[in-house]
Length: 467
Ligand SMILES: Nc1ncnc2c1ncn2[C@@H]1O[C@H](COP(=O)(O)OP(=O)(O)OP(=O)(O)O)[C@@H](O)[C@H]1O
Ligand SMILES: [Mg+2]
Image 1 (cartoon, rainbow, N blue to C red):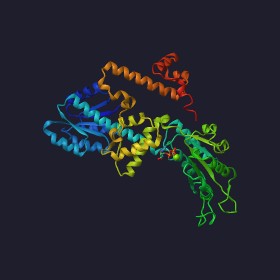
Image 2: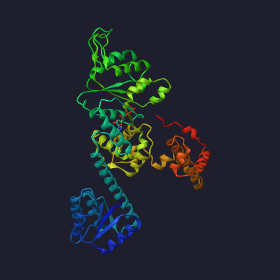
Image 3: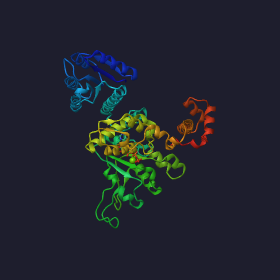
């Protein structure tokens, strides 16, 4: 949306001048008014980002006007226009809440720079409001996401949660698998009971039975009292088998037995006990491939793979990045007792343009660090320690670009762009050239030529996306 500006000045010539300059150089919509009382009426009815007002007007001072309109909408920006003689009053005005002031006569550039700054700030406020509203409307699952990919996951969570079906959650590290597991438990009839987490990668093989099933006093050296196992703790609740792909072969057999039989016996006990447990497993490993490589039992896989949820990497749902960023902004502002109103457009752009090998966890860490280092009231690129999107895209070029003449720099940029674009394109399309060309909207032969120029082979990318 283009910003809207209300200009109030008793001198009609000034209104005409401002209207002309701003309309020539920007796309903002302008309303001018020479009477402050009337201006207030207009302000009540219409939405403005900025009010520019003269300081000295016969009917009402600019400061009174500012106070009245800020009562109506507190976050509207105000620029005070003033003559040299009253500059102290203008300074006082900024102390009272004006964003800036311009002394008459002003230079065109100065006016445009001031406008740019203030309107940018308004954009942040609007974006902030919009995202905060979207966050409030967020679902009951405490998982942020508004992309179709995430909507599909939410739908599956809602359908799967009330059942007792075993769920297998797969996806790269940091995509929110544990969050999904917790949401399933929280939305099930088992929510008043525990969700017990077993980190399958961290458990020692010789301890698994006592860890899972517990033991009775004297079952082995060191078993000085009876001890409950995780299975008993998870009874009538959920057992979350995290990092299931890291189970050793011996442990896979034991877990399979638990899944199949639902019965267990504490170490050293003669009594078999029944467990009523819902199982959720998660892994960032490719289990189908592990089966092919004989490192994961196929029968265990089929036991687990009843309801499958595949969480996509963050780069496949980049449209969620602004919403997630604001969510983490809120979270870490509260935790760090900071008041940061928003994220600058360039920082948000850079956050959205990045690659995230560490997925949502990485984004969360960047925002947390940014908030710790932020000293102002908005999160900026330097706070986040990020480069601008253009720098991110062409790091190789940006490193010695001033050493090259323009023509060479441009050619190098295009070469890098071709290489980067084609690699990503083929990666997304599994090295399928016809599909890639169709998506890119170019001829197959042209894609071939570009690949040859960049020394890229399609078979490098075959099978990179298969789970
Ligand atoms: N959609 C989301 N909304 C809000 N927070 C999220 C979302 N996805 C992930 N997170 C946050 O990101 C962090 C990592 O998520 P989580 O631990 O669930 O990932 P994971 O897939 O289990 O990772 P790993 O494979 O490394 O164990 C957590 O702090 C989590 O709260
Ligand atoms: Mg995890």
